[in-house]
Length: 134
Image 1 (cartoon, rainbow, N blue to C red):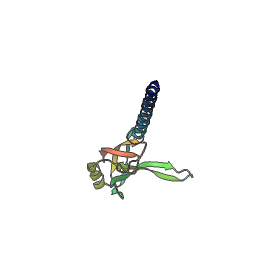
Image 2 (cartoon, rainbow, N blue to C red):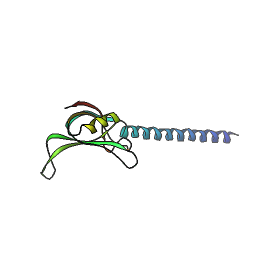
Image 3 (cartoon, helix red, strand yellow):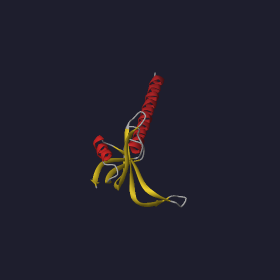
Image 4 (cartoon, one colour):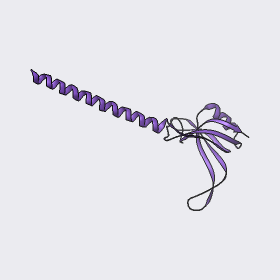
């Protein structure tokens, strides 16, 4: 009689342990996913001339753009190149304003993420508002 009680206690203890381990793995996975794709790593404002704003994508149509910043950067092999800021655009209204004003000088507020989601855009930089346009 005591053997069946001990076996039930052992199996129920193992089940509790297994459930705790599974929940812990799920929690760690959810935390890592949040950190990689939804945690805002950085925010800021970039300024420059809007080179283009386009809507593109095979499955998920996203808004993408490129800002040409004033000044020059240095390429690793010693040459000179312009500073470019490639970004994704979060909102239809922001995209339409950028699209109709290509070539103008913009101050764009952006959020930086650790990872790229296909429905959010092709870059880790996501523009969420226009600060200024000249």
